[in-house]
Length: 156
Image (cartoon, rainbow, N blue to C red; front, side, top):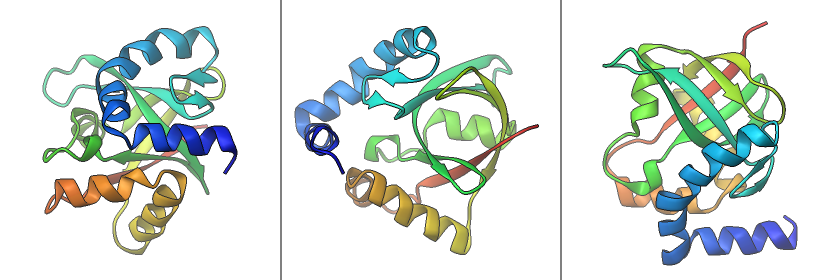
């Protein structure tokens, strides 16, 4: 991990960082990500993408900035909801309508979301905690809720 990444992770895990990521970053990312072809976000370069899915209840398009990281076969999206007790709305959207558009490290592309379970989920969780140590604190805070982990596979 580079020094800049380590410092950002430390900030994100602080109380001030938590508030920034919860309230400021999503608004900032919705403006910055499209203007930088999915490369730059509030968390740095190639860290956050915009995921547009169909609302589970409304049927309307919903766009959410999500931390994404590459995994064999696609991108991982972690439904931590910052350690809050309920699942994030975007995860319910992907369960109901797995097709989505992702703008991350390039122009928007079509993906299909798969909820991971069992050994695949365990391996993805280990990858997620390696990516951002704060996920472990989120897991503790939201217990007994199990954090949903999605593999977003590109649709060719």
